[in-house]
Length: 317
Image (cartoon, rainbow, N blue to C red):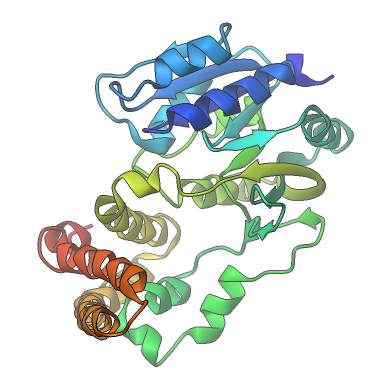
């Protein structure tokens, strides 16, 4: 069992049941468990203390986000490896052993990640390419209706084969503690989203490999914390996407990207709002489509908030 060489770092936000299960799975693998609970009044602390009595629990006074919360969980670690595990993910003893063995056998590898599966066993995206400016413009602006489709497809759907990759999904990552410390941990300017892409890129730029190990499997429910505040998280995702481009692009490239974003983003959100509103009316009139109407209604409210309350926050990032 490789667990005694690992500290599991888990950051939770309003996911008490899932966090308790995640902590228990890491403890069962022999790992030291450290939980950062970013929402004090949700019962997470009590649930984790019951399921995993040996866990160290941090309760910050405010929501630190994923990056800063993960850095807090990793702070002071003495074990060789850090396992960053989402609160709605679990990793078996065998899978953790497989990941640790890969790092032991490959000194040039700095970070590894498992294949991700939904609880029903179905496939979940486990790797990405670097999120370049073209892919981000396609995903979040009106330019995507005309341009950059190939760039976005390449970013979202790389080949899932074992070996070196650009980006591992942040649901379950195992990294050498010494490397993580040398890099200064996660960039805390990302509150949530894109911080794993940023870290993977810095690992590679340092000369170490980021490797996908599908022989290990993590079960990841997905989106548990995001369901608690989808409107706010949508804005956070947009801010983080721009931060990533700014961190790794040239100054002229950043200026061109920002100009394109400023022109294309409000149009995209306005069109999304009109589309979703039309769907709400159409589905409301059709028998048996009330659930779809409610779903589109929630999406329309998110678009409305992005176009009003959060507009300046997104555009000024």
